[in-house]
Length: 272
Ligand SMILES: [Zn+2]
Image (cartoon, rainbow, N blue to C red; front, side, top):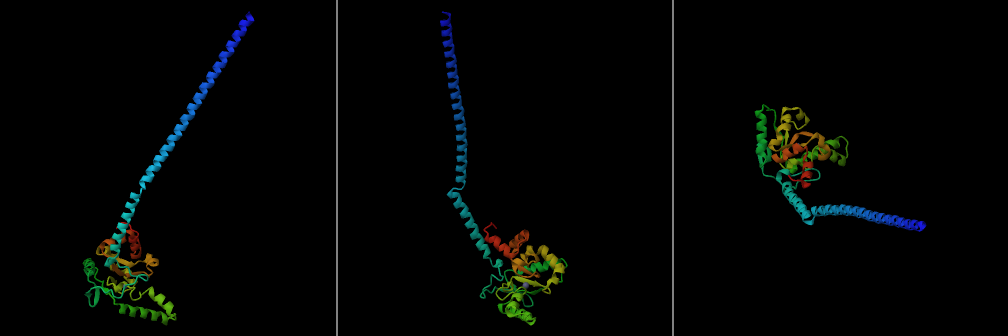
């Protein structure tokens, strides 16, 4: 009897334990499932955020935005094209020649020295301002030159090198670093003024010092600076000053650009 009771108790006990284990297992499974689903949700969430971010990015570069950007750029370019075609910004160097048909309307500065009629008042004002500051030893030695005159100067320089034993081609190359070929000289534009003795002695004068400081206010630039010889292709000329207009001259001075660099900067479609 006791054994039967004990057996019954034993079976009940076992059943309870089994049921307990089963419940624990079921609970654990539910918990694990819950945890897994939680993680999955969190990952989904992350994915969603990523997709949203991507969406935003795509929206930022939507076709209309791109079109706007392109439109702005092309507008700037066309505005710069107009600026680049300004008479006072004409670039003349060994790669950019002046058409022989281009002869500006000239006005006499002094004793046969001719300058572009549109710019001569700025040259006069600049010289007057220097005189007022007590700088009186300053004069324009050379300004506008006809193509024929330039040709004559160039050939004379070629001959000078040939006399030193150089061959024609070499003599021309050497001459070109000092005197520009006809159609390739700024003097053909009537916008360049050579001061005093037309050599680098000018660098030591008060006039040069004053010009470096103030010429931009009158629209003039030092056209062939010492540190830009590689770019201009012309040896340093402290005496040669070029009219480009006040705004351009000031920007060039501020940015430290020579004319070649400034033209490239304008072509780069940056706003002016
Ligand atoms: Zn010159």
